Length: 263
Ligand SMILES: C[S@@+](CC[C@H](N)C(=O)[O-])C[C@H]1O[C@@H](n2cnc3c(N)ncnc32)[C@H](O)[C@@H]1O
Picture 1 (cartoon, helix red, strand yellow):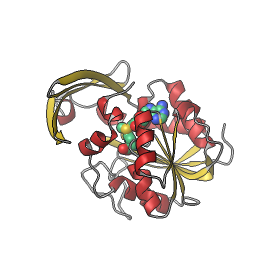
Picture 2 (tube, rainbow, N blue to C red):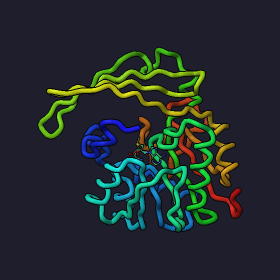
Picture 3 (tube, helix red, strand yellow):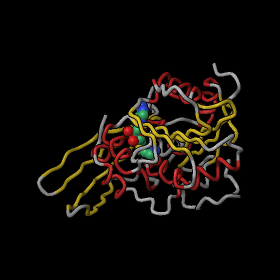
Picture 4 (tube, rainbow, N blue to C red):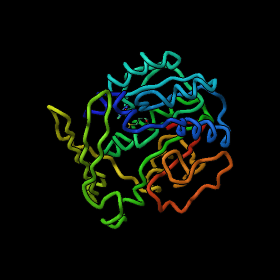
């Protein structure tokens, strides 16, 4: 499944700016706080590669994989310090291990079936040294599956306009929760002068306990599960932030450590 933003990495970054490299700062702080065994990183589902590149600039040995060819091509062209490869997380096999794997902004939730999620988590575990950390960030099923349809995120179609490279892009987006399938579904209609199309995308919604169980089955111990703060929450992350463990908010952050033996 591809979308305009996955095909157009520069537009993706303009659409979702992160000028202060909040996501990379979050990863670096979390890795230090939870005792990552070293500074070799794999960003799984790296998108444009900007997080891996920001960590490389901080001295990390950074590698990155993504399913979208345009994204991998972008990483190679713009971030030569990042070792980038095209790969599907379900079958990932780089033949080496790292100290930290990141999987940010709901990348895991692009996998809708439990078997696919488990396969991806097992492949991630196989790429971590024992004691290595997985740092993942995603939408929180506990929030969305119980949310009132009127919460801002689900309240109706939103419109956003952004000028990029001299062209005005308009996106009209409607999100809704498909409770039976445990999916957050999105219909987005793009228009720009002389063009446009409609995309249908979805993300699996996981309850925290489901995520913990999947991680356990893949060979991880969960060290922390929190909804705030994080790189995409209103409360800014800081190195000694208190972690919100009620898990009632929109985002879920998980830190999990690979056990000695993976199953
Ligand atoms: C929402 S973007 C997040 C990108 C980046 N992690 C960030 O935080 O900006 C999700 C990314 O996951 C990638 N992706 C989705 N399914 C994947 C899979 N099965 N294997 C590898 N990458 C995948 C997409 O191509 C996309 O670049």
